[in-house]
Image (cartoon, rainbow, N blue to C red; front, side):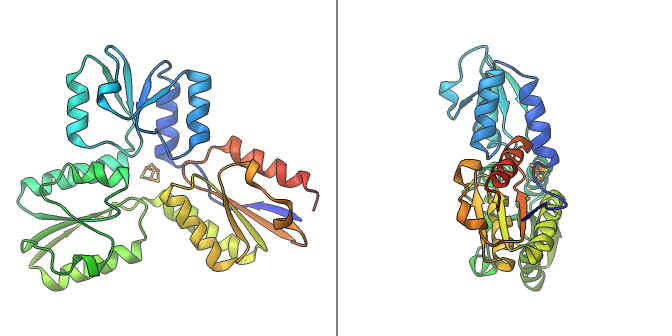
Length: 275
Ligand code: F3S
């Protein structure tokens, strides 16, 4: 069986940057999980003593606090900055951007529509910069929401462009002024396009990434559409030999928070099955 990696996979720019910042900040803590990957978070703990806190009250005085890739809500950041701690911001610049946009647009008197999942940490952060934002995942949800005639809209970085367009079209049809900001991140597209291409040829697809990672789930859905034998795993231990029996081409892709060492381990373990 041939094992082939997608042309683009794994760590994006923002995650590489955040990990580098964490590695350069030993004996610190991250505020919330730095990235959506438990194994990498454990490696940072083991190799650099980078811990994790989830609550401001658990942050010890004089500690160094690394802000995670997805950012945190503005009031929390303000609370941290007031404490006697060093704040090191590893928020991806592509996440800082929509935060800045919604803050400015709110100040200028626009209603803010955020296309994204209100339970996702990135969106919780972005929402906190806007005044009374409307957060939706579909046009249906948007219908009937009280909005001014001047509307500004941003999207969660990992959302599909086509879906965002539906929101934008609806707003254009119903409002006098619509400011559209394309805040969707290219890194996600590149991995998705490559996964689509490979899954059309593969007999079995392995998608490696955090099961709570939104971009990994999207990669998995794309692969599943094209290749019914697609599996989402977090690490090599979850592999099963029978997935590969009788297969000729095994495609591999990985979410934007998946480190290379996990991908290599998965490939080595598939090779050991000797199918
Ligand atoms: Fe940033 Fe895009 Fe990655 S928003 S964290 S570079 S997927």
